Length: 133
Image 1 (spheres, helix red, strand yellow):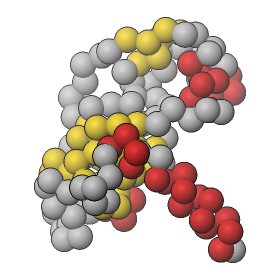
Image 2 (cartoon, helix red, strand yellow):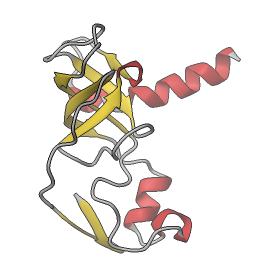
Image 3 (tube, one colour):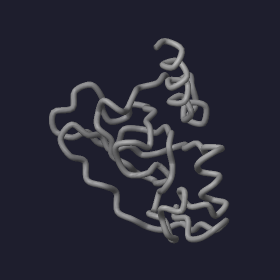
């Protein structure tokens, strides 16, 4: 998805990113809409005015869940088919069909949790970390 202007977006076709060593290629299944940042970008306040429209395909897209489609060389902690959550930091934005992430930024979650409910789990991690400092 690409945000082309205030309140406007379109679906664009892009090639999946290449999976490098210590990375996983994730087939995204769900992505959150951040009530503060993403909503502002959709509403025309494009990332604090730091970016012009059209925005980079997939931007912003912070937190999401998907399935590992491919693993890079040296990856042993994750395998194709694993269900993972990840953050928008450290790789392509998450409003995309496929993204890559360093292995350490993709965390497995159980099949008992659906993708829509798993996508915002990274936010829970932020809150948990704040209370454990």
